[in-house]
Amino acid sequence: MSKKHPWFLILATCLFLILIAAVSFAPLLTSYDPLAIRMDRVLQPPGSGHILGTDELGRDVFARLLYGGRVSLSVGAAAMFVSIVAGVVYGAISGLAGGKVDRLMMRVIDALLSIPSLLLMIGLQMVFPASLTTVILVISLTSWMPIARLIRTEILAMKQEVFIQASTVVGASTGQLLRRHMLPQCIPTITVLAISGISHAILAEATLSFLGIGIPPHEPSWGNMLMGAQSHLLAGAWWLAVFPGICITYTILVINFLGDKLQDRMAAPQFRKGRENERVSS
Amino acid sequence: MGQFILKRLGESLLVLIIGSMLCFAFIRMLPGDPAAAMYGDQLQKLSEADRFRITENLGLNEPLPIQYGKWLGQVLQGEWGVSSISGEDAAIVVAKSLQPTFLLMFSAHFFVFTLAVFFGVTSGLCRRSLYDHAVTVISFIFMSIPPFWFALMLMVFFSVYLGVLPTSGMGEGGGQLRFILMPSLVLALSHAGYYIRLLRNHIAITKDTGFVFALKARGISEWTILKNHLLPNASIPLLSYTGMSLAVALAGSIVVETIFSWPGIGRLALKSALAHDYPVLLAVILLSMVFVITVNLLVDLICAWIDPRLRSQLLEEGRR
Image (cartoon, rainbow over all chains, first blue to last red):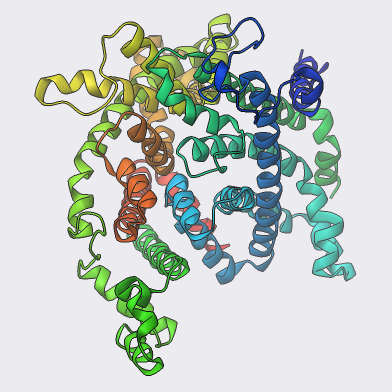
């Protein structure tokens, strides 16, 4: 059913667009400044005036959620972009080179993957000064490896295909092969990877900020808000912890859902038709 | 098999060497000059010649490959530096917190396997039923909940609202069970979804294959087929996935241990990073790397021993 009419894909896209719209039009949805400190309105529960209450410095939680979403989503998108570029370049080089170079390059990836990613992030975070750029860099430096592996596998498989061999015989250079034939064939894979990459990066950013080594504390981000909430949680200020968590979960759920449905769609026969025909006729 | 073992051993050794080079590069990238770290403000008062002599004595003027060789020699001999917080040997500090982490990993994986075998097998057997969809959706939701938030919510519910479970620490003796329940549950539930999906897909595919059909035709009961054929068959993907996701589980334990103040290596890593205690941080990184590589090697060897098809497949891949 879902193969013919991509209802779930449309639903997932809509849910994602709602999220983007909410953080983009943040100033229209709330009149509060996410950074304004009001010591006379500290730790107010959700209700009149402040829809989702205020935090320990009297800042409006709803406003901080919306503006924090901007930070979380843009960090996620930027980190995903950097890691995709790095992964595709590395994977393509490794796959094209083949032989000893390829094997060595894959062992480097094995070595990087054998260090728990969060440990790697903590270590790298120590090397660079704390800032937004550092967080993006650290997340992308620790998440390009699986992408490179997949792209390399695709390129290796493609090298066996007759149409690639035919192009080589006709005299296509490696650059032409890559640009005209191999990379366009990788686009479905890259799209799915990009979407799961965003959710991975958002989770990584939230985790780092929650542990106190991510986004600098003065910037609102969902992870930062949760870190701040920890000390007031036992005193009963549940709204500080519940809402940022729901935002992260919603975002990751929607993005994973979108990625999953997109992957199904791309595995569907009508999408693969062109590629299958090529294989059969050649 | 011999050829396979040799090839796999060589690979792991190469990965270890590359990993140690990365660790060495990491030390060199750390901010601060080692000479300044040793002499502090005194360094400014020394003459140019003295300063040169100090860096020379520390071996910092030698070419990088030689420095790497010396460093590797020290690491292999067990000289891992001294913790800048406690002044103890870094290796000893790390060794002390290994046991709690193993305990946590063990109990988390116990939950994961129990959940995965139950839900994965049942939903794989009744594929496309309402129950199967429900399991898929629920495991999808649990895969998307950030573990640290889930931990906070459990804490609020069980420790603050109900007041039945402790929020932090490890406890002693028989009381440990109450302390380990929440951390391992958080760790387990954030990973269980992947295992459930893996098992479900594997069971759903193998139950429609020819050999199962042949067994049914001979009148063997569904339960016997499941017990003697489907489950052993599913153990290989389960085992190899456990090996592959070990690094992920260790990363998860950093978060969980920090939240629940569990005295393991995850919390130690974060604590030493925040206190700029680099020898300890490096010891944790090195140890977990060696551990992950070794376990993966063992898992691959066991899988190849159980399933000869994997062996030839992997050897074939190497030749290409």
